[in-house]
Structures are given as structure tokens and as C-alpha cells.
Image 1 (cartoon, one colour):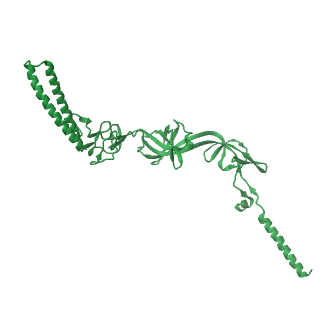
Image 2 (image 1 turned 135 degrees about the vertical axis):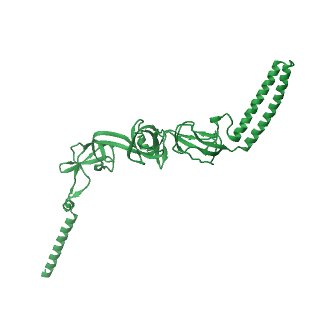
Amino acid sequence: MSKRAKIILGIVAVFFITALIWFGKKNKKNVIEYETETAFKATIVKKTVATGKVIPLEEVEIKPQISGIISKVFLEEGTIVKTGDLIATVRVVPNIAALNSATGRVKNAKLSFDNAKISYNRNKKLFEKGVISRQEFETAELNFNNAKQNLDNVASDLEIIKKGSTAGLGKTANTNIRATASGMILEIPVKKGYQVTQTNDFNAGTTIARIADMTKMIFEGKVDESEVGKLLKGTSIEISLGAIENKKFPATLNFIAPKGTEEGGAVQFKIKADVILDSKYFIRAGYSANADIVLEKKDSILSIKEALLKFDKKTEEPYVEVKVGDKFEKRTLKLGVSDGVNIEVLSGVTQEDEIKIWNKVSKKDKKEDE
């Protein structure tokens, strides 16, 4: 072999060895170091938040007993009223058919009255002369009185159709819209000149005003079906209002709906709670609110951070890896209540076990950081 060939082979050999060393270093796995944590005692509170609003316990709608046009509104929204206070008056717009019918009844009653009066006067004279008996006279007197009463009744009906009231009704006049409950006027949705309809068996009628006792407020909201089964009546909750910052109002859960409604693909159940008010704050009806509800609470229980958990791909059982000597050993866990950060451990690890943290740190990265 020539000298030149030996030099070429030497260069190739050196290049080949260098390449092997370079690829060996490149493919060599970094040594992984894992930090560890231990289980600890903690108090875990599982909560849910129900969104809703704060409304009065009782809200009364005031409606007219006669159709017509609002002639005057005496009070404003926010006014405190008592039962019987005058809120507004209604001017009656007579129904032509009813007016015509009532006028006809008055005319007929007048004819009957005039006839009964003539008969009464005639029989009275005959009775005084002894021509007829007392019984015949009393019959004529009764007919006269009945005719007079009937005339008064139809005349009153005609006046009510025309004006909405009649002499002698006083505060019971249908044209006077009065408060039927004590409290604050929340809303008066009508003004002078508005046409209103009466409430009856076939029509709810026009709302003149809404009245509520603002000293008795409740929270009304909804919770998901996955959580409603854990709620109990009488549970103490806390209400946060969007309009009042850094203040929570205590409340007591008093109603859980037996039937849910589907909203956005999820079944929601209505809940209600009595709110304990603070005299320093005026709570307006309809404030948006959130209710913090404790579903489950456990004190001083063995816990770990949820970030330490892994789940088996086949069985989906939760597990952690515990340091045993220089290696880590897989431990299947039985878990309990969680608050989203920490979770209760019922079995699988002890407070002395060192649990792997799943953030890998190589020696190389560690040196670079240093």
C-alpha cells in the first residue's frame, strides 16, 4: 500500500471515529432529576357558586277593576305606602252597548215604578175608606216598594257604567286605584292618559303599580344538576352583590326546586335563600348576585396537591410515584374530596412518603441555570 493511500485511510478513520463520538454524545440521554413533595394535613372546602339575583320576598301587582284612561297618578316610584293609600284614578270610557242596555233598563224600571205608584195611591184611598182589605193594600205597597228599589238599582248601574262609581260607594269606587299591601312602590309602568283594562277571569289586566316589602329580600338563583343533590335546606350561604363590593350578606337556603329546566344543554335547578340584610346598605330589587355554597368540608385530612396526580391509561385509576431508594415506585391512590388545588388521600401514601413532582429537570439544564 502506498504512502498516499495510508494517509487517506488514516484521515477517513479519524473522521469516522470523530463522527461516532459526536453522535454518541448527541444521542446520550440527559440524566433526569425529580424533585419531591410529601403529603400534608389540610382543611379542604368544596364550594359551588350559584348565579342569580336578589328580589323581594313578596311583590304585589296593583290592577284596576274597571277599564278606562288614567286621569292622575298621585305617587312616585320609591314611595312608602300603606294598605289603602290612593295611587291613581281612572276615568271611565263607557262601553256603548252596555250604556245603551243600562239606559233601556232604567226606562223600563221607571215605567214599572210609575205604574206601581198609581196602583199604590189608589189602593191606599180604597183601604182608608174600607173598600179593600188590609192584605190587598199591603200587596200593592210591596209592589210599589219593589219597583222603587229596582229603579234605584238600575239607575246606579247606569251611573257606574258612565262614571265608574256612584254616590255612596266612597273609597270602594272602582275609579280609585289603591294599594292592597304595605311597602315600597317599585314601579309605576303607567302615566296620565294611558289606557288600562280591568282584571277579570279572561284578562290579567293592566298593571298600575308594583309594591314590595324591601325589608324582606331573598336570593334566587340556579345550580347544576351535578351539585343539587349535595344541597340541604337550612344550609348557611354567603351572598355577594355586584353593586356592593367587599361585602357579603349571610343567607339561609330554604328552597330547592324539585324539577329542573334545561339551559344550554345542562339541567339547572332553582334555589332560594333568605338574605339577612345590613341596615347600612339599601338593597334594590333585581341586584345581580352570586351565592357561595359549601358542598362539603373536611378538617385536618391527609392531602396532596392535585398536580402530583397521574392517571393510568387503561384503568384510569389515579396514581403517584413514590421515591424508594434511588428509584420511584408507582402507588395507586384512593381519593376523596377536592377543592381544585388540594385533594384528600384516603389510601396509597403516608405523610412520610416522598412523591415525585412531574416537572423534569436534567443535570445539563440545572448546570446552565446555575
